[in-house]
Length: 124
Image 1 (tube, rainbow, N blue to C red):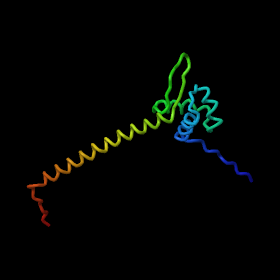
Image 2 (tube, one colour; image 1 turned 180 degrees about the vertical axis):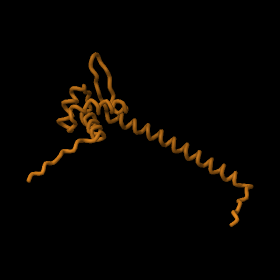
Image 3 (cartoon, rainbow, N blue to C red; image 1 turned 135 degrees about the vertical axis):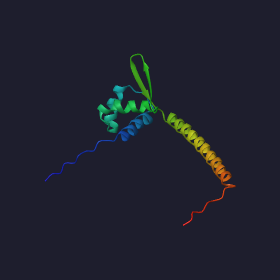
Image 4 (tube, rainbow, N blue to C red; image 1 turned 180 degrees about the horizontal axis):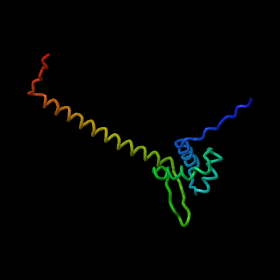
């Protein structure tokens, strides 16, 4: 009795990660047809899904795309990803700081509002 193993396909996030690895490892510029040849061989991404994965990365700003003449060129360098993460971290830290300040001011407002009020006891 032979058991056939079903090969599980890659998730969209795994495909995106592997596609980014191609760019980061080679530090090169590619056309779509180049990526459709490289991705299946090196990273196991089916050729049919390369365009969709690549477009999602471009839409998210992780991969740059430029039309030169009649061709589209795609690239992504590790330094750009690092700078994007640093900018995102700065934005999140400033939002956290603003949220903390707002929380503190609201707590003070609550304390001020409590002064002069007597708590009512419910009679049973």
